[in-house]
Structure formats: C-alpha cells, structure tokens
Image (cartoon, rainbow, N blue to C red):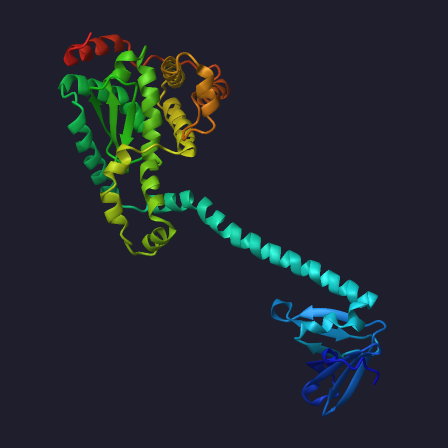
Length: 382
C-alpha cells in the first residue's frame, strides 16, 4: 500500500461485499494517492481513485459511500466526513465534483428546512380565521345570545333606547324581509333604535341589531338604512364577532374545543363584552359583510343602491372632518383596518352593474318620511 503516512490517512469505516460474513464488515479505510484501501480481519479491498464514485447517504446524509465500477455490488463507507478533506480525494476532479453536487443538495435541503420552519408559523397564522370559523359554527347558539344580551345591556346604559311600540313595530316590519333573506333559523333577530346622532348601526352576536337614530333621520330613503342593516346582518350570520373572539384564544384552545374539551372558551366568550364594544372588524370581514349584505338586499327585493348612497354620506362626513382633504382618507384606506370608502363604493357599483342590470326595485316604504317625522317627535328633535 502506498500512503502519505499522515495520521488523517486512516478512518474508521466498513464495507459491504457479498463475500464478507453477513455481507458486511467493520474495519479501517486508508486513503492514499493510489486509492482507498479497506482493511479488516476478513481481508482487504482496494478502490483505485480513478473512476471512484462518492455518494452521501444515511439519516441526514451523515455517511460517505465509495463505489467503483470494477467492484460491482461492493461499497466502502465511513461516517467520518473528514475523509473528504484528504488531499488525495480533495484534489480528485471526479470526487470533488460529486462532493460539490452533494454540497448543493445539502444547501437546498437546509434551505428547505429553514423555509419549512418559517412557513409553519405563517401557515398557522393564515389558518387562524378558517379555524376560528369552524369553531364558531360549533359554538352553542345560547352562548352567542347570552353574549349579545350582555353587550346590549351595556349599550342601554350609555344610550336611550326608543321604546315607542308603534315605531318599533313599524320598523321591525320594514326590516323583516331582510331577516327572511338570510335563510337562517339559528337566530331570532330583533332590532332596536337607540338615540344617537351618528351615522351608525351595529349587530351583536345572537341576532340583536342596533340602529342609531341619526342614521335613520339622515337617510333620504329607507333603502339606505336597510343597506346598512344588510351589511350588519352579514356580520351576525357570518359570526364575525365570535370569530374575532375565538382567534384571540389561539389554535390550541380551538383544537381542544373541536375535540370535545371546553378549554376555557366558554369563559372567554362570556367575558368578551368589553372587547366587542371597542371591536373593529378586519378588512376581510368588512368585505365579506359588504358582499353577503348585498346578496341579502337583492334577495329581499331591496335596491342595493341604498348601501352605496349611505357610504357616500359617510364619505362626505369624513371629508368634512378632514377639512375637505378627501385624498387623506384615500391615502390611508390601504393601511386602515377597514377597506377604504372609495374602494367599497367602487366594488358595490360593479356588482350592481353586473348583477342587477335591467332589474327594477320597488320602494320598500312609501311613507318613510312620515316615519322619520314621528321618530323626531318621539325623540324631541327637529
């Protein structure tokens, strides 16, 4: 054997060969300019460097395998990768090329592992809303109703609720076709008018709808009010408030609930009234409410143009508060929690042009002005 005579010439290893006992033996690999020599009590095998083939294998490519076309069915191996740094192998063109190929494969494997580690949290984050939706659909309706009632009690502590029976009955009849259009029997919808001058309405879990008097009184026709209610109604049927609460508890609690354990979710929901009072829906939930609310309006035979004209009223108020600088609102719309008003109007106009072309909607309330006058009288406003 010709050797460089250096300590690093010798490496612990083994060989596979049909003539070895059991087809395998442990021994020593000695590297020289002549090749790789395997020595064991069972004999020796020498692979010339010329046409030597390198392969990496085992768990995590921790083993180096050497093969040679002159010795079919035979291979030498070691777990000591320092063997690849031996000058006789490091300078061999064929082995060096194979080593570089393994290095690239190893790089991509490590890169893929890093990407996987980064992708898992991202995937879990992206799965939060679908998972929350699945959990929300399985939450008992009485949990939702109880939460909605709790929040409504706090609302009534801050604003006066209109209790005039005739006004409430008339308004409920006006809204009833919209409730029917949802096609759901999960909720017993109820609507309340509260004294508040702002252009607003909101829906609570369990089907409680709250409409500010300012929205009703500033509307030019009933369709504007119903357009807003269609949007808010979609927040209820799609359980957006409940989904927002569920997302806060995390995926572990969601999973526990789905496999039959409360995981504390009931307590979280029961104590979420303050959260809902200050809640702002996500951009995706607002878009979903726009689209599904639009569907409810059309199904109920209510002109969806009313929702657009209401948004235009909001836009005018925003512009007024910004000193007429409408471009400020537009520039913030992308960063806002909610879609920008311009964006929402443009989207709804496209749907109206595409889906209601040639359709005529009958007014839902010929005497809406009379209703507004009686509401003003009830509230003692002009």
